[in-house]
Image (cartoon, rainbow, N blue to C red):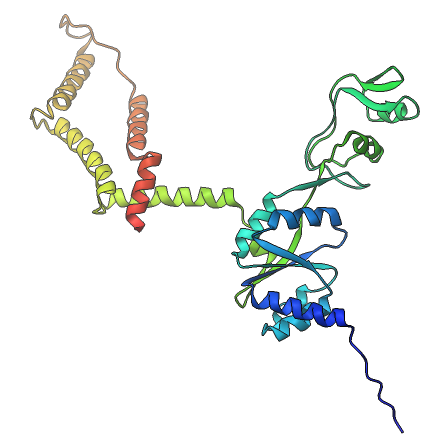
Length: 329
């Protein structure tokens, strides 16, 4: 005779799965973050900052996977990321927007043994509020100049004890805590995101905005330069194209001697330059009674012409913006 014992599932687990299933069904973006060793008070701060954008829920991995299956999510796509202690972020915003927001939101904490500084660690000048005693030897080890005044330790001048990336001296920890100095950043460590059926690993979520801005600016300059070169027929680009063509036409007129009211300066200027060049060539052989002005060297002239040509080709920021919008609608 066998006795089958029915295992009763705690009500809180049933309620938890139901709540998670509802959140999963009502969210287009689910992000998984590793919170192993993450300070609970800092997680609370992030919750407050994300209010209105996303909701953070800490729960058991097994309960989350059960809820995911019930919500119609292919759990096999994300189960590799659901190990250890995790927080789950539910949102209807773009996962990249959430990732960028979290990367900009830096919390700070006091250092622990083995921590490196994320910013300069400076012991400021002034009253530390610490009673003179054994702590003076700690200041001495840190090479911080002090004096005792009214029984309290005073730092004589601002003293740098660690640069960004440097290991923070272990003996500095109690002093930094007493002075309220938090030189270590706390960042929520994302693992991945699940967005409308697509799994995005953290390596793809991390975006360098400065690099992307630089790439877009370079693309816009190259696009506008190409538009000018091929005379792409839109007003913003043609303004630059016509200006470039006008300068080239004046140079050609000056070289060929084509004389009109608009080209007179270029033609005469070119003629004068040639006359002075001829005068320079016969100087010392024939006295024409005319002083030869100092001429630029061939190299200097080429460099100046090259600089003028580059400046001519280089569009302003306003032109880049207007031209790019015309090229791509």
